[in-house]
Image 1 (cartoon, rainbow, N blue to C red):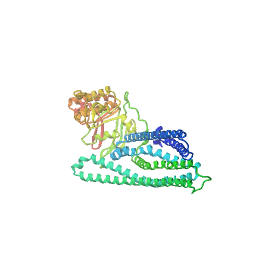
Image 2 (tube, helix red, strand yellow):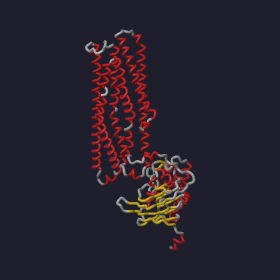
Image 3 (spheres, helix red, strand yellow):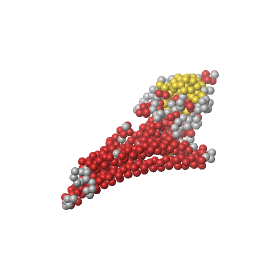
Length: 563
């Protein structure tokens, strides 16, 4: 019901116009029967028939316009519904924590959001208008025929309902087959995407031929299921044509025998105009049902797609995705406290990288997160940013991050990893990725603070210089500085950095740290690092050692030397 509401006025127009066209058809058939009756039986001169013939022509044009407008409105409604649904699903997916996406095959998610959502378009654009026509027009046409000749009307009333009955029987099989086909398509998409991602590994281990054969086998299975759906669809169409031909033939036989005087079920002889009207209306009774049969498989496909969408997104928090995101903080920053309560981080093999950690990080704390390589510094930063599941509780401003929406966490916490990703485009575009609406002046200020201009100013186009995907054309230190400029543009109260100066020389590192400390003056800053120069700039040290976390104020240089 909500999706139908999303169709707006266009959907209502697509439903109403075919019904209006049906009403015009009755008038057109009546006029045509009168013209033929007067010309044949009454021998009316052509001059008397010009006006009704002109009216028939106008009705034909009018119905053509209504049909074109109805199809266009249906296409607009279907496109609008699928666009809004796809946007909603993407928003819901992005609102989930990374472990939700990581637990699903990317190919299956892609097939759900792109292909399965697209399968809903024909349902709203074609099947729904056809269903309204098939529900109203055949019975209305049969009722219109009844006063003209009750035998012909009764034949139409009896045969017309048989068609939807047998179509429904065939439709059950089509729906089951379509569901199997949709599942096979989703599996094939996931299989192909997974193999494409691991193409280099498969090549190195000589598995390319075996995987190619597996893809061919899965494609053949999908083809067989698709052909089964088509066979059932053709069976449904054949059923409709059989009963439609039977109904039209019955009316034609009755009218013909009545004119020959071999059937006399009326009080008087059947008039020519009445017989012609019945003959003209008989095929039209079944035309809406033919249209419905032509699009009946769209219903089966849409229902199967809807079930797959609901299955794939069954665990999505709809209420969280539906809420209005909080506005990004752009004024003076009020730094939020950070607290760790009995936090544990576990590897997939069950071993602990952090166990029962307790830590209160006061507002405005600048802490260096230190420890041996591989001890879990990056994992802890990811957990604080809500990107990794942890035991215990991590709280921002007294609220557990498990209770916060993903967009709320992103509005309060910025994480720059050790290997930030840059996209193909200009340097300015990659910085502006943090905040699309940022002005050129804001991008330039962030770039200057992160020392991006130290190398960008030497490039031919400056910040408008294009780079390749993954930062192709830049050094590791330059990529890290662009990522740091993104963080400055975000302007969040909590900043988490992972080795931000790992690829920099001492002089550049000092300038980058000057800008970082100026930016972080009123913010909570936690930096995972092996750099002594960076650690000396921090007010506290968070040390990870043997799965335990130690949080202490950093000693003054003289006391450190003495210790």
